[in-house]
Image (cartoon, rainbow, N blue to C red; front, side, top):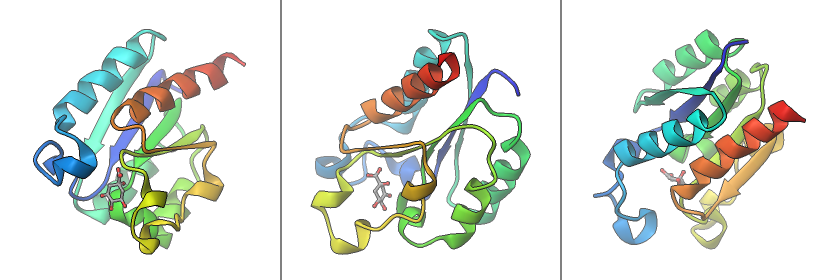
Length: 146
Ligand code: DQA
């Protein structure tokens, strides 16, 4: 196992900062990446950061990193609510999976209340804004130390 945390972002998250700022805030994805790197460095960990709008690319990357990463932080965007393929890939990862959503999905439309990932995740962080990514990395670091 290597000393990196995989941070995976699904569809439309490249638009962070300009997309529905009332829901997702004004921070950009570049800011999220910086926050993740900064947080992981405190624990001597690196970050490999991916955003993709292509489900196959996301699956390929999970296959590539599934046995290597020290943990997975995943904001799968809308695939959270739709993708059994993503779930099937993530169930194979060998390190803790933390599911993150910037918005409080439970306070939104009913179709966002179900996640194909929550029951296979070591933890779920919703509605904490981009700080949720920081919490997820801190949790992975704590699990490594326990
Ligand atoms: C999201 C919530 C999802 O329902 C939505 O499709 C997204 C972003 C969030 O971070 O709050 O794209 O995952």
